[in-house]
Image (cartoon, rainbow, N blue to C red; front, side, top):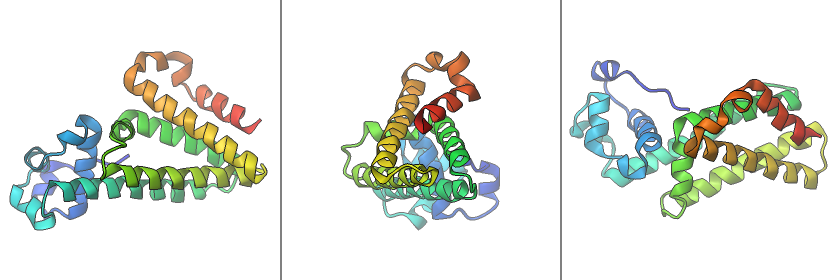
Length: 193
């Protein structure tokens, strides 16, 4: 997911709007949507509220920037996965990468829990549609017909969301075999049958 910037480094240079958005996204995953507040984020960044107001007119604009940052991360992941020419291996790497990342960040569950929020809803719909289209294209590249590729993408996405939710509400259930790389192989092998 997003990489945390060192607060000391932030003090020694001017912060960008992306620095604020990235930190707000981290806070969103840690504390929820209501936890995205200017003063605590400024403290985390070693900045002042003045720095915030240089880039954003208000908190809602920061929330929207964090959501845009999350949406951009989907494109970053897709670009990275497309570097793998073998679609079967691409699917394995994608599943493992996104499940581990989403399970550890908390952003996905926070956004799903706020799906009715007018700021979150359109971004969540766009990201879900983009992810579904991409996963469908990977299954199609494996050799599945369009309809079956779409069905498998739906199954893969629901497995992903279920894993993320379980990691959020009952992480102890994911110890042992469910936490191992064998688990990811089991899921992907089932999807590719």
